[in-house]
Image 1 (cartoon, rainbow, N blue to C red):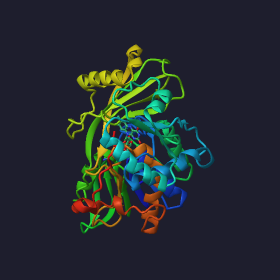
Image 2: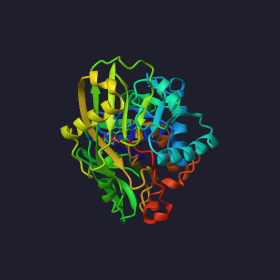
Image 3: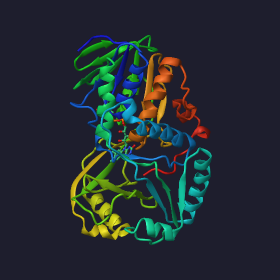
Image 4: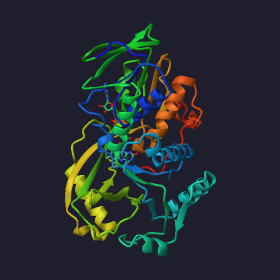
Length: 385
Ligand SMILES: Cc1cc2nc3c(=O)[nH]c(=O)nc-3n(C[C@H](O)[C@H](O)[C@H](O)COP(=O)(O)OP(=O)(O)OC[C@H]3O[C@@H](n4cnc5c(N)ncnc54)[C@H](O)[C@@H]3O)c2cc1C
């Protein structure tokens, strides 16, 4: 492995490879990406549900999504590798007065931002989503440009183009320390395969970022939280195309996957930790909840199941910023379960921050690390599933 680079990117998930590609496109110098697993996308990225949507409750999340959806739609022209993106939309079922009120407010913001989100009355929900139990449903929102994409396509596409542009990608390399001069300036990293000198280091380490921040004595409040998924056997009682269907009141969501149905749901009793074994008891609860909302799923058989880690910040927004007082260190992590859909924007914005000193495509002030020491700056994302 080379022993120096201008920029070291730590982490080879969707965020790290996007940052690598966008930096290389700007000819940022010699770039080395280090990933501790044996292959790219081995952690949260490879375990994610592939959902891509712009229907968020905060403006900054909507902007990150809209920027990224433009990139996904232009993927063939820009990246040119296969990317399966099914724009079958996202439908959010609204099952309480409070949700209707919140989504009415969001809908006004979405319209102002140029998003074309349909508001469905209950009869329209029943017509468009005939597989859904209408129990408690007061309406739904639907955005056609949302959908779901293949995490592997995205990761391999960015990695391939980054490599074409000269980025060196090393897997099986774990960063064990960050070298600082005078405690304030990055000079390189230590790894299980030797030291690498570098003046710039970017943490794209998802759920592990707190550990990397601690190497520089900076607290980065990102907690690993287990989330799980069940995919059924081939199942065509629900006719394609149908949208990613979300019941926010239970956090249940499901969409088409490999001929079957992918089912996800959040366990809000889960505490922070790196355990990513599948919790069978909660898996049962997921299936029961899914059958209550879509009774037709009683005829489906679970085939695959797995768990992975969300990388959660206190306000469910990512951190894209310099790493506190440490010169030459940056962080792009903590996407709180939305990193795949925000990967294109994350790469572009981090590149602007590193090369220009400031992001220009989107105002990322709300994503600064310093917000956590000022509660008045925290605006929680409400539409988290
Ligand atoms: C069940 C589940 C469902 C999800 N569904 C969606 C969804 O529908 N849509 C969506 O947008 N997002 C979804 N997500 C979230 C999404 O997967 C993450 O937000 C995204 O993958 C984060 O990407 P990342 O590159 O930051 O993290 P990761 O993919 O985890 O990559 C970080 C990498 O850093 C590496 N690393 C850590 N420490 C070191 C070290 N010391 N040295 C070297 N390498 C290191 C890790 O090995 C890892 O590969 C889901 C996540 C889960 C678990």
